Image (cartoon, rainbow, N blue to C red; front, top):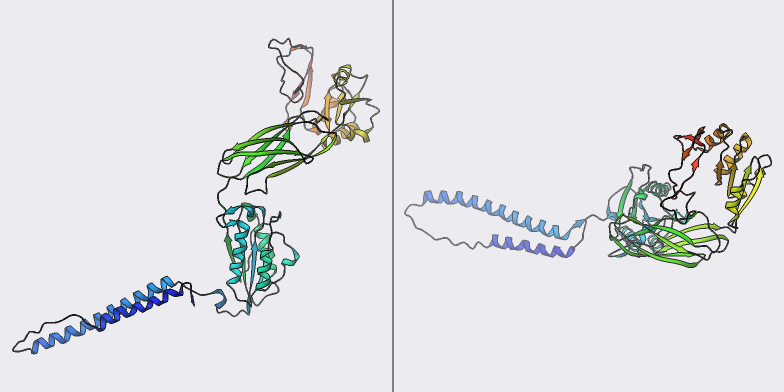
Length: 470
């Protein structure tokens, strides 16, 4: 047995105080003389015996009280290295979490630095004859070997932040493997971490009853932690030299207000736009960044924010393609559509190519950004399958149905998961409004007059809503 504060044991000298009080009886008795004292002597003998027993009990109680009080302040304990057991030695596996979340800080500094100090303290509690394993999220091959105390301390000093993340079941299995070659050793597992939710995993932990498992948690201060949640462009089409608008959404992952978080947009390692946002606790907010001056080709983008000290989630990478032109294929059954020709002729960015339905080069379909199926009355099984494959691989398909035979569309539309036409309604219908916010009409109209004379449809197609409509 050892004592955490052995200096308090000197206070045991206080035991002499009640002993001295007992030995020196300071009470003085007054003598009274009687003619016959025989009965008084009997009473005096009985009373004296009881008084001595009472004094001895009081003395013992006072001595025990002083001893227990001194021991309580000295804090006795049994060191791990002095436990009596039948094991030849002890094997200790220590996992130190070095994931990005360990870059946060507390009063002791960075969490990783505190975890390293805890690992060293754990090792110092054992004897120099015991063996140690040091494990991190890296799961390196060299970590699957036992180390001496000196090598363990050196290995702890070399731990650095890693982008790898492991779950607790994975960690325990890895630590348990090191014990296979040590059947006659006492086995102890330590896990030093901040214990984020993703550490727990979904698997159950199977542990041998001969293995002692101990968790050591390091806790960060409550800090505002903001991350880039997502980014997207307002326009799906990117033209060389045109103005681009990108929406950046930030998320506050903490319970503290985040003020004036700076945002920087980098394209091909060049700064293109800046902004800033303030976020409520656990809230999200978006900002729109505008920039221009892009050349044709693939662009490498990066969104950067700054919210020290949690910096591992402050960068968001993305890429997009700026095309020199947008190739479009129109599949026609008869002649070309003069209205489509007029629309795309006004902007040289769009390159429209027409082809008859019977002369389609299916191998070239992936090279077109948009395919127009223009009033094709009979859609073959082969064409339907090729168009379905084209859409599944990210292509865009726009269908102008033929009013002569809408039944031929049903097979294609069913495979695409869109609304199926029921019938052609051959009666006039006044157009009530134009949904200018629909993606098809976005950017088409500069302005819409209040009193707009909308056209009258001579006939139209009624569609049935399907449960799988997308």
